[in-house]
Length: 167
Image (cartoon, rainbow, N blue to C red; front, side, top):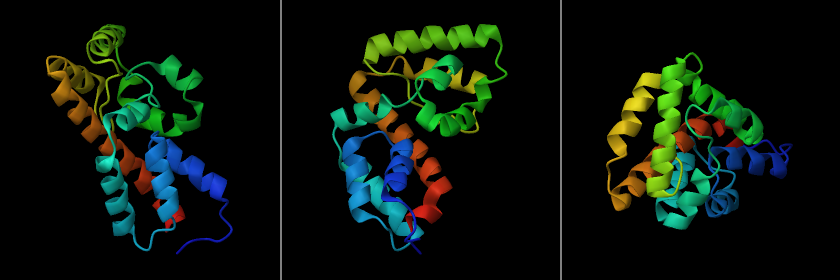
């Protein structure tokens, strides 16, 4: 159950690290605390899928580029503990793979207008490279939905790590 000593500001920061959409965050805070774990995940997903493209893009902007370790350290310090673990598959990547990821990230961003979003947990750098290569040819209207689904996966993983604080 909910710990009454938990600071609401901390809960807000914890949820914001799970998903960078302001509308998603506000709605989750409105529903907090959640009665069950199932309700937490059900509501998080319901809210996410009810948002619009601008909300999804806002959430995407809170992610570092896949393979950009310097970006992880500099720009995303508030969610670095999540992103570093999620992108651990690129920590030991070869320079060649990192250069290819960088090139495809740039190409992807130019084509779609936002960074490549993938649930990187458990994926090697080679796997992430293959995923971006396979998605770069998507139509924009299909890719935004794919990226949105990937963001939802990321959010679930992050919520799972803090779920006890939200009940």
